[in-house]
Length: 403
Ligand SMILES: *[C@@H]1O[C@H](CO)[C@@H](O)[C@H](O)[C@H]1NC(C)=O
Ligand SMILES: *[C@@H]1O[C@H](CO)[C@@H](O)[C@H](O)[C@H]1NC(C)=O
Ligand SMILES: *[C@@H]1O[C@H](CO)[C@@H](O)[C@H](O)[C@H]1NC(C)=O
Ligand SMILES: *[C@@H]1O[C@H](CO)[C@@H](O)[C@H](O)[C@H]1NC(C)=O
Ligand SMILES: *[C@@H]1O[C@H](CO)[C@@H](O)[C@H](O)[C@H]1NC(C)=O
Ligand SMILES: *[C@@H]1O[C@H](CO)[C@@H](O)[C@H](O)[C@H]1NC(C)=O
Ligand SMILES: *[C@@H]1O[C@H](CO)[C@@H](O)[C@H](O)[C@H]1NC(C)=O
Ligand SMILES: *[C@@H]1O[C@H](CO)[C@@H](O)[C@H](O)[C@H]1NC(C)=O
Ligand SMILES: *[C@@H]1O[C@H](CO)[C@@H](O)[C@H](O)[C@H]1NC(C)=O
Ligand SMILES: *[C@@H]1O[C@H](CO)[C@@H](O)[C@H](O)[C@H]1NC(C)=O
Ligand SMILES: [Zn+2]
Image 1 (cartoon, rainbow, N blue to C red):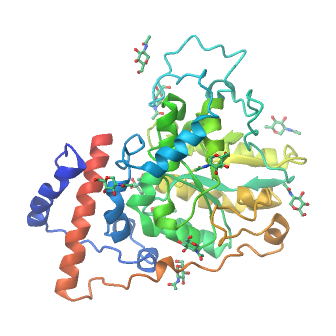
Image 2: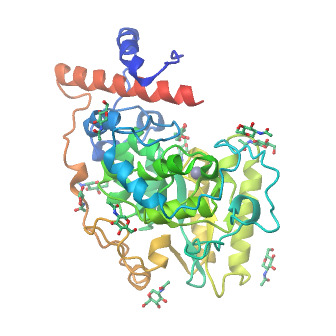
């Protein structure tokens, strides 16, 4: 089915009527975290559903998948920004645009005055007040295990596997994905994965004005998960000292990587599956030849699509064999309080490797709604479906705008 392109999220309601009348689809829609978690068909997993706390709050957020700005009536955000902005350098300008078009050819890469990773792989800021990025893992023979770009709607096979292995990872979640797929996000935190931010809309951060870059980091995932992350990863690794200062102001530790599987590029056809497997194989060969004997490492991998998740599963046993330990990045750093809120904790590295992979009891986020699937009364089902199409229209209308 081809959907019309909406001019804004506010026209989506008009289209809703059309969608309902056209509706011959009887796709099952999830009604709770536990319900979503047990779906096995990827298409059903990715059927949009209605989750009231998100729908009710959308007005208080930037448009999902669009570059963020502070909402003009959001005084809390404006106050936080005015506080943080005082420590953000004003002599570092946006590089090119937010789509990664760096026409600023005058940048002196050799001197690299801004510690612009994209150009130089710099991870030790030139601005002495800023901490270095986390690019490697202090524990020898240890991999900082993590995935970018989630939550993906069809991640159940992947998360089921991690659960079976009692393996936790660091999940770098995109704010817009969390609002699209809140039950999937809840599953991640309930199963003990560490959650870090990966911006609101996944654009190149050094292209944003400082205030908009702040908004990309400020509006993240607290609405759905009740937590405020203390770590983040810049999309495409695109960071410089200006962006680092904004992240630092928000209490976000920057996590980067040393090796890239390039799994994310397979979808675009820019790289073959075989090349991605070679990248994994080379990383494993390094683990086996002693490259990480004094310091562990991080490889960039993704919870992005079936290929990236399936490749992660295929390679999991090989990584387990090659490395002594696979742990979330925060665990490798003994970061036992991963969020601003103090009611969650992570195990220490020693606890984790001796088998205590989680230290926080499951949250109550998946007990709030009861199951109303195809077995429910027709009235209840109609309501769920109507709301679902609203969210569907909102989500896909906006996605198409972004495309
Ligand atoms: C800002 O305005 C929007 C739309 O009018 C409203 O839904 C939202 O609650 C407001 N936010 C704040 C923080 O007042
Ligand atoms: C402003 O920044 C200071 C220093 O970073 C911090 O201690 C304070 O809590 C901040 N205030 C607000 C309102 O964010
Ligand atoms: C560089 O890109 C910016 C943002 O897209 C644009 O405003 C500017 O005109 C471009 N400059 C050149 C020299 O192409
Ligand atoms: C922790 O507290 C937040 C609110 O501050 C709440 O949303 C969340 O569900 C709590 N989680 C747990 C595991 O108690
Ligand atoms: C694919 O590679 C080409 C040439 O290097 C580049 O211009 C393009 O942006 C890449 N596409 C993606 C999706 O990375
Ligand atoms: C390990 O293998 C990598 C990749 O083949 C190579 O670059 C590196 O020099 C090797 N290191 C050692 C210690 O042999
Ligand atoms: C999630 O993965 C599915 C299955 O590969 C894919 O169809 C979908 O586009 C992905 N979602 C996003 C937002 O990338
Ligand atoms: C990839 O897709 C296939 C076919 O739908 C499915 O059987 C498999 O479980 C998926 N893998 C992952 C990791 O999602
Ligand atoms: C984590 O704690 C263990 C046990 O105290 C210690 O050996 C290790 O050096 C710590 N790692 C870091 C990065 O602080
Ligand atoms: C919450 O979700 C987790 C993971 O899906 C599951 O293991 C747990 O049993 C659920 N808890 C409740 C109370 O439904
Ligand atoms: Zn990403």
